[in-house]
Structure formats: C-alpha cells, structure tokens
Length: 165
Image 1 (cartoon, rainbow, N blue to C red):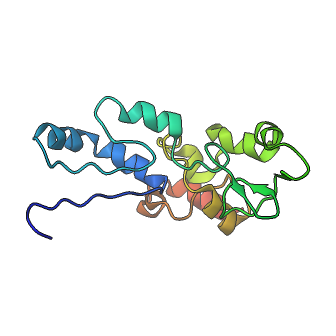
Image 2: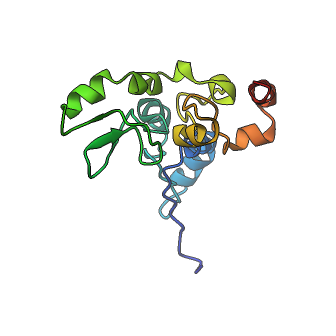
Image 3: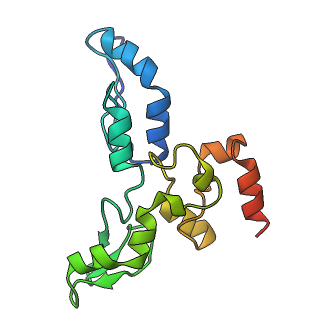
C-alpha cells in the first residue's frame, strides 16, 4: 500500500467487539494524533467514550436480538446461518414472532450462555457466534468454537468441562 493509504476494516464478527474494546486506548492515541487515523468499524463505531456503551447496547452477535432472517417462503429464523424455524409471516405477524418466540428470548439473555462464552468477561459485548455454536453443538447457547479466547486457553476449564458432556 502507498504510504498515505489507510486500511479500513469492516467486520460483523462478534469477537471484533472484544478486539475493539481491548484496542480502545491505542485507538484514542491514534485519533488524537490527527487526520488519517485508522478506525476499525464493526456493528458500532470504535470511538473514545462511546465504544463500551454502544458495545453493550448492540452486543456483538445480533442473531434474534437485532435482526432475523426471512426466507422466500415466509419462514423466520434468528439468523440466515441458524436454521431454526421460529414461525411464518404468511400465517402470523412478524411482531408476534419477534416478541414471543422462546428461542429469541433465550438468545437475548446473555446470562443463558454456556461454556466459555458464559464465563467470558466479554459476553455482553460479544456473545460469540450463536449460529456457529448451533452448527457445532446443536445448542445455540453453547460457546462459540471459533473464539480465539477458547483456543488461547483462557477458558480451558469451561471448554474441557463442556467437551466431557
């Protein structure tokens, strides 16, 4: 890249919220250094004084919390990658599905998370990928097997206990 070009990163991975929070101090120095600073963007802007509040509000993975998937047949799912049929808009109102689905209620409460994600200090700003947990374990509340913190061993005891189930 040319010396005056900056790389912009856009990502919807829930784990990026954790990275943004961990890098916030460095980001503050870069922003205060003047024009041309690099600001990685995810579900929210990583700005001094705003990042933690926005991260808690939006909270990483939005499956069933911020968005839902709608198939051409009218089936509603928490996410396009999570094939759990919650209802069908051809037979019931989307609002009723959104407000009363037991699956969505579970997804919206991060205190329900299990394994490493349940023990993680970033569970309210990240929460892991619920679709990946569902794909690997058949349980959307299990830990995200793609999380680097699990691989780093920070939650090895929770992960090991989960694997013994």
